[in-house]
Image (cartoon, rainbow, N blue to C red; front, top):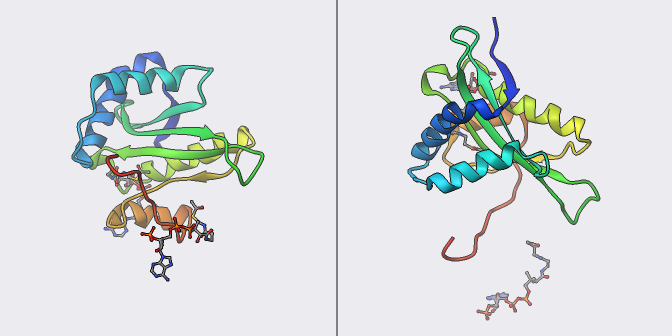
Length: 150
Ligand code: ACO
Ligand code: ACO
């Protein structure tokens, strides 16, 4: 039996929020409930190009991982590209392939949308995540800057 990945439904609010909060704790941030509610709602809105999917344990049938991603226009291609914004797997469920399956799910959806360019950012010191990323992607030379105050 294998982990499966499926899109969220309205019924997943509680479990998605649980994973969303653990993801924030990992980053030592605490976003408001308004932001969580808005992100969850947008991911279900067919008019918004933002989605979320859950990895489901084959043993408990409960969510053990989450991915949130969205599509945006760009200047270097006529096609949109997809930013894989958030990825999280429950600590006790890690290193069993759930993270890889969540990313593969986004790749498959991106292919279906005919916008196959998928990218994401991570902290340079997040070596654990990068052990996975080097297997399913490649590291670019880019450095991210932000407007001061954000
Ligand atoms: N030594 C050797 N290899 C290791 C080790 C280790 N200590 N730890 C992990 N790996 C390898 C595994 O062998 C595996 O590769 P394999 O599939 O070839 O065997 C890979 O790293 C892990 O892959 P998965 O099992 O598919 O991933 P996992 O379910 O463990 O999820 C994730 C990875 C999502 C990064 C998880 O560790 C996590 O949630 N971390 C905390 C939050 C986080 O860092 N999220 C990503 C932030 S970046 C972003 O959101 C875009
Ligand atoms: N030694 C010390 N300081 C230097 C030097 C140097 N050799 N060269 C430049 N600087 C400083 C300048 O003093 C200035 O700082 P200051 O305002 O405090 O005096 C700063 O660097 C340059 O600032 P500007 O004059 O405002 O910028 P400029 O008009 O030169 O444009 C740009 C910068 C856009 C990066 C230009 O060099 C360029 O087009 N480069 C090629 C394309 C490129 O690299 N684009 C950015 C890619 S990333 C992206 O597109 C998001």
